[in-house]
Image 1 (spheres, rainbow, N blue to C red):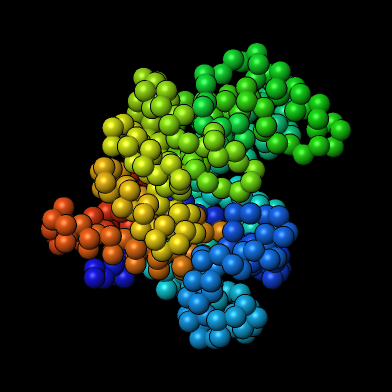
Image 2: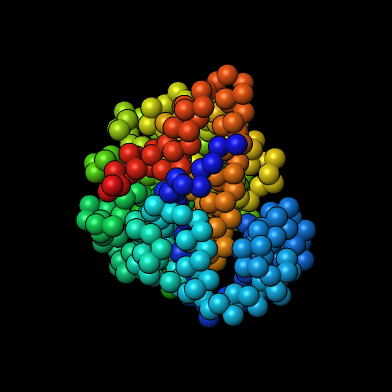
Length: 375
């Protein structure tokens, strides 16, 4: 078996840890599922293969019994910062790329994570838009504010990201400015009644995603898109990356590098095909690794390697909330990738040296080049 433990990982899509005072037993359990219904978290997550496997991995690392009370007690004994440091050290990360738009009111600052590895930001454009809508009195104010923010990005931002799949789907169309303005005004009216600011109307969502793509083209920035499975806020029918084909073929976005997150599971082969035929499309293994069963994780790696160029495959953990997810993501990412690459050698697809090079590219090399990360 290939030993990939010495290859530092560029985690090209993850999220900030939550502040320790917000972490309860239910929040801890909820970190192992994309569901958020109380019954799912309190009862059914314990019956998933991912949770049971991960609990044993974490317990073995902490040298305690493979039971949730024992794991929580071991974490408390070490303290939050020491627990996090040990899990990140064991994960062996070269760099972390963090989307800080997930539960932003509960997370630790992005810069806090630099104690574990160099940190780069992923800017979630819907989160940016929602914040600016709260401040804008008119459509003209919002439009100029959003475009200006994308023109003047902070230096630590290395990629944009869209969660259009969660809101109105990936069939993103060239926007009609008048319809987008009407959507903006409706949202502002809802805010006046005390409703939360949430992009949920297609004309405005399409305008935000399209404007972000224009900014990515102008600044030669990659842009990540949530694709495939996620929490129940998402309609899986509209999260298939095949809906994005018109964007890949649009001459205005020919130089935009699209990253399809989460192995687009269960549309993994579709995503792999897109990356194989469109020069500006890349795929990512995060969330599928480590959330799926071992067989499922092997499937997504095998499915990509059926057709996708090795140079187009990226690795991430999509870890969030707790440091354990960074650790198990790195652990199983290396383990599964090593096993599948060994199969390619045995099948005659790759030589042993080519398999080693492929592992290095997938775990860090491709991301270093794509995002132009410092050496």
